[in-house]
Image (cartoon, helix red, strand yellow):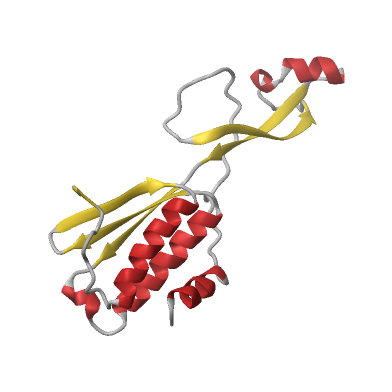
Length: 167
Protein backbone atom coordinates (compact mmCIF):
# COMPACT_ATOMS: atom_id res chain seq x y z
CA UNK A 1 0.00 0.00 0.00
CA UNK A 2 1.43 3.40 -0.93
CA UNK A 3 0.68 6.75 0.70
CA UNK A 4 -1.99 7.72 -1.88
CA UNK A 5 -3.83 4.40 -1.49
CA UNK A 6 -3.76 4.77 2.31
CA UNK A 7 -5.30 8.25 2.14
CA UNK A 8 -7.93 7.07 -0.39
CA UNK A 9 -8.76 4.08 1.84
CA UNK A 10 -9.16 6.35 4.87
CA UNK A 11 -11.24 8.93 2.96
CA UNK A 12 -13.76 6.20 2.05
CA UNK A 13 -14.67 5.58 5.69
CA UNK A 14 -14.54 8.79 7.75
CA UNK A 15 -15.85 8.84 11.31
CA UNK A 16 -18.54 11.41 12.05
CA UNK A 17 -17.16 13.39 15.00
CA UNK A 18 -19.70 15.35 17.01
CA UNK A 19 -20.53 16.03 20.67
CA UNK A 20 -22.69 13.46 22.43
CA UNK A 21 -25.39 15.98 23.29
CA UNK A 22 -26.39 19.38 21.98
CA UNK A 23 -26.50 22.03 24.67
CA UNK A 24 -29.55 24.26 24.92
CA UNK A 25 -29.30 27.30 27.17
CA UNK A 26 -31.78 29.90 28.34
CA UNK A 27 -29.26 32.09 30.17
CA UNK A 28 -29.60 35.74 29.14
CA UNK A 29 -26.78 38.17 28.45
CA UNK A 30 -23.07 37.59 28.02
CA UNK A 31 -20.97 35.41 30.26
CA UNK A 32 -17.59 33.77 30.10
CA UNK A 33 -17.62 30.08 29.32
CA UNK A 34 -15.03 27.35 29.85
CA UNK A 35 -16.03 25.90 26.47
CA UNK A 36 -14.62 26.84 23.09
CA UNK A 37 -17.22 27.45 20.42
CA UNK A 38 -18.89 29.73 17.96
CA UNK A 39 -21.73 30.95 20.17
CA UNK A 40 -25.38 30.01 19.76
CA UNK A 41 -27.45 29.09 16.76
CA UNK A 42 -31.21 29.52 16.73
CA UNK A 43 -33.03 26.20 16.46
CA UNK A 44 -36.51 27.68 16.28
CA UNK A 45 -39.30 29.69 17.88
CA UNK A 46 -42.31 28.48 19.79
CA UNK A 47 -45.15 29.98 21.76
CA UNK A 48 -44.82 30.30 25.52
CA UNK A 49 -46.55 27.36 27.23
CA UNK A 50 -47.71 26.85 30.79
CA UNK A 51 -44.77 25.49 32.78
CA UNK A 52 -42.06 27.36 30.81
CA UNK A 53 -39.69 29.63 32.69
CA UNK A 54 -40.95 33.21 32.21
CA UNK A 55 -37.32 34.40 32.03
CA UNK A 56 -36.98 32.45 28.77
CA UNK A 57 -39.41 34.74 26.93
CA UNK A 58 -37.56 36.63 24.19
CA UNK A 59 -38.95 40.17 24.33
CA UNK A 60 -37.96 41.42 20.86
CA UNK A 61 -39.39 38.36 19.11
CA UNK A 62 -42.52 38.44 21.28
CA UNK A 63 -43.20 42.07 20.26
CA UNK A 64 -42.74 41.24 16.55
CA UNK A 65 -44.98 38.15 16.70
CA UNK A 66 -47.58 39.64 19.04
CA UNK A 67 -47.46 36.70 21.47
CA UNK A 68 -45.06 35.52 24.15
CA UNK A 69 -42.31 33.63 22.34
CA UNK A 70 -39.52 31.32 23.42
CA UNK A 71 -36.41 31.21 21.21
CA UNK A 72 -34.76 27.78 21.30
CA UNK A 73 -31.00 27.87 20.80
CA UNK A 74 -28.23 25.32 20.39
CA UNK A 75 -24.75 25.99 21.76
CA UNK A 76 -22.15 25.34 19.08
CA UNK A 77 -19.22 23.62 20.77
CA UNK A 78 -15.82 22.93 19.27
CA UNK A 79 -14.15 19.61 19.88
CA UNK A 80 -10.45 19.05 20.17
CA UNK A 81 -9.20 15.64 19.04
CA UNK A 82 -5.77 14.62 20.32
CA UNK A 83 -4.20 11.37 19.10
CA UNK A 84 -1.34 9.82 21.05
CA UNK A 85 0.82 7.23 19.27
CA UNK A 86 2.78 4.72 21.31
CA UNK A 87 6.08 3.72 19.66
CA UNK A 88 7.30 1.52 22.49
CA UNK A 89 8.82 -1.85 21.45
CA UNK A 90 5.65 -3.73 22.44
CA UNK A 91 3.68 -1.85 19.76
CA UNK A 92 5.95 -3.24 17.03
CA UNK A 93 4.78 -6.82 17.75
CA UNK A 94 2.26 -8.47 15.40
CA UNK A 95 -0.04 -5.95 13.68
CA UNK A 96 -0.41 -3.49 16.59
CA UNK A 97 1.70 -0.84 14.88
CA UNK A 98 -0.22 -1.08 11.59
CA UNK A 99 -3.62 -0.96 13.33
CA UNK A 100 -2.51 2.01 15.45
CA UNK A 101 -1.34 3.93 12.39
CA UNK A 102 -4.52 3.22 10.41
CA UNK A 103 -6.68 4.28 13.37
CA UNK A 104 -4.66 7.48 13.88
CA UNK A 105 -4.89 8.35 10.19
CA UNK A 106 -8.63 7.69 10.13
CA UNK A 107 -9.25 9.85 13.21
CA UNK A 108 -7.07 12.68 11.89
CA UNK A 109 -8.75 12.59 8.47
CA UNK A 110 -12.22 12.61 10.07
CA UNK A 111 -11.30 15.54 12.34
CA UNK A 112 -9.93 17.45 9.34
CA UNK A 113 -13.11 16.87 7.32
CA UNK A 114 -15.27 17.90 10.30
CA UNK A 115 -13.23 21.12 10.59
CA UNK A 116 -12.32 20.18 14.15
CA UNK A 117 -9.14 21.09 15.98
CA UNK A 118 -6.83 18.08 16.12
CA UNK A 119 -3.33 17.24 17.20
CA UNK A 120 -0.80 14.44 17.29
CA UNK A 121 1.60 13.41 20.02
CA UNK A 122 4.08 10.55 19.87
CA UNK A 123 5.33 8.68 22.93
CA UNK A 124 8.76 7.29 22.05
CA UNK A 125 10.01 5.43 25.10
CA UNK A 126 10.42 8.12 27.75
CA UNK A 127 9.99 11.15 25.47
CA UNK A 128 6.70 12.76 24.48
CA UNK A 129 6.82 14.72 21.22
CA UNK A 130 3.94 16.84 19.96
CA UNK A 131 2.92 18.38 16.64
CA UNK A 132 0.55 20.71 18.44
CA UNK A 133 -3.14 21.28 17.88
CA UNK A 134 -4.47 23.12 14.88
CA UNK A 135 -7.06 22.97 12.15
CA UNK A 136 -6.99 22.80 8.37
CA UNK A 137 -5.23 21.24 5.41
CA UNK A 138 -1.71 22.44 6.17
CA UNK A 139 -1.76 20.89 9.65
CA UNK A 140 -3.38 17.66 8.37
CA UNK A 141 -0.75 17.12 5.68
CA UNK A 142 2.09 17.93 8.08
CA UNK A 143 0.80 15.29 10.49
CA UNK A 144 -0.11 12.83 7.71
CA UNK A 145 3.39 13.07 6.21
CA UNK A 146 4.89 12.20 9.60
CA UNK A 147 2.46 9.29 10.02
CA UNK A 148 3.35 8.04 6.54
CA UNK A 149 7.09 8.22 7.24
CA UNK A 150 6.60 6.20 10.42
CA UNK A 151 4.25 3.70 8.75
CA UNK A 152 6.38 3.14 5.65
CA UNK A 153 9.54 2.58 7.72
CA UNK A 154 7.83 0.20 10.14
CA UNK A 155 8.39 2.66 12.99
CA UNK A 156 12.13 2.95 12.41
CA UNK A 157 12.21 6.45 10.84
CA UNK A 158 11.80 8.48 14.03
CA UNK A 159 13.92 11.55 13.28
CA UNK A 160 12.13 14.87 13.74
CA UNK A 161 9.33 13.72 16.03
CA UNK A 162 8.00 17.22 16.69
CA UNK A 163 8.51 19.47 19.71
CA UNK A 164 9.33 17.84 23.00
CA UNK A 165 6.54 18.26 25.56
CA UNK A 166 5.64 17.00 29.02
CA UNK A 167 2.76 14.71 29.88
